[in-house]
Image 1 (cartoon, rainbow, N blue to C red):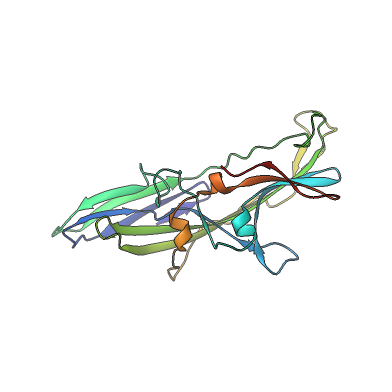
Image 2: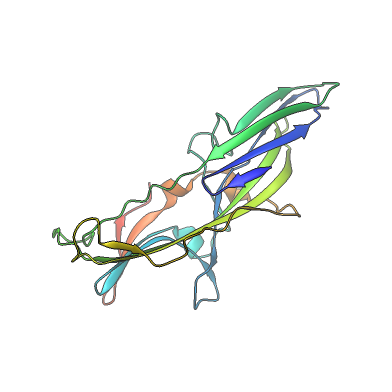
Length: 229
């Protein structure tokens, strides 16, 4: 199995012994998992934090933040529980008397939206001063019997994305942003022991539909700028 920062590719060998249809792919291929933030004991996660003068906004997953769930599916929103239904899945029909070799792969890219101005203001004055991102993922490689829905976990992979960018909105375009965090990301880790899949990671909602954009001023109550879908 080979993993990289922007995608996970796996080649596995399976011998199909069941007479029913067997589908091999990624069971909820990527799930968003909580991890402790600095200075906190409880598990919580902010997907993307924008720091402005005097305050901040952030993309958040409320159920993760509040500890109501352990993971949220990162499915495409159609192919539950799989990440997708193209290169991410392979279908085999059994029984067979030979070993079948095939590949499944996924490609996950980050497309964050960042606003220069305060999202709850009508002003277009650029006030963004920092962008911080810290996301943890667990990827499961799973074989599933499509008749009985029995799932067999073949691999568990963990990876994490951390970005810290300092912004000076007073500088000229092209000179405003500077990377102050790590220049190299941690590579995905294939675990030696399988981890169980949290039940809620196999069903709706997916991360894109569950996330909310919050505005958190230093004074006053937080404001939901973009609610969940």
